[in-house]
View (cartoon, rainbow, N blue to C red):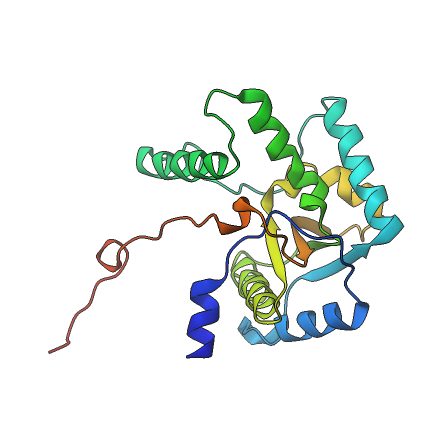
Length: 222
């Protein structure tokens, strides 16, 4: 039941203390992440871990790119296009709830943009992880990589730490790829902010989950 509790209690952390993380702790978390299942044991995905000066350099590079209105470049589609009305409503509800937890009004476009841009500073976490995958991998390998990321998030929570996935990082995949001199065949999938959770209202924010009858069906049971 400890696993069930970790699954239910885990949340995205968007405010961190400045307490550093040691390399051994991060290494252990990544070793646990690699225990996730994968088809044919291909173990797709790479985790590029940054802290200190290299991490600050990447964040400054992203800030300059955003400030110069550099066009966004992503190598894969994260959301459906067009997005169905029911999904759009869910997306908006989650966004409004997050901004409400931060005290940002719905019409405060400047405040909302500033908060979104914090994705590219990894919410001031002491460690940032860039997740990549080989471009040659099949679509199913994204599923396997997702399971590894989820395992990492659960292991992080279990260790008393906090993390937040950053899908928005892929919006500037070319900036990240060039700045870090990543291998040519690597696609930037997302980022992960990692550190010790701060005491902040935003860290108490939770999104709602569907009732079972909306996403599951059963047959053959008594």
